[in-house]
Image 1: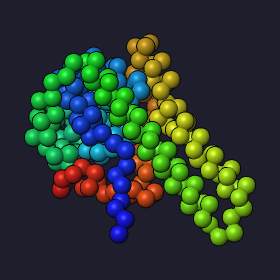
Image 2: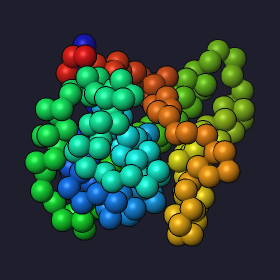
Image 3: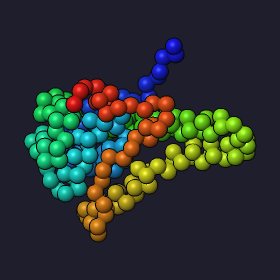
Image 4: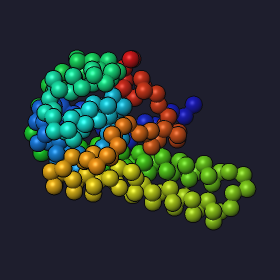
Length: 202
């Protein structure tokens, strides 16, 4: 039986980003949130923690182990991500701000590779449809691959950067609250459960 490959990811880098934010707070969050979104995290538990941090940041709240723990508890998500113990382990990560930004870029690049792979898998599925016209299949494949350059995350970056430079809240004017979106590879060959993604039971 052919061994299934794991999607591109760097879990150590993801943990480094979260630990760095817990230690350095808004200073680091302001830098990484200009290009990093919760959907970029492979581990869904990591994504949940990052989303909590991002929500606190957008509301002008401090970001540290205490505030993130409180936020996740209020949202009913604390047990889901591994409890206070998991956050304490992340907080033990000691990195300088520059290192955190570097790890955040690694996380982002791995996410882009996953999106490309998921698009390629969809293109393959289209091409294998009985009776598919090659020109149609090629056109669909091109749209899928090039859509990786215009993901929802990418389209939102300019707005996020602009609002934060001007000192305004990114959800002012009635913009919707951010929530975890379906993972881009969820419908492809790498479908994973929440428990598998977290690497621990809930």
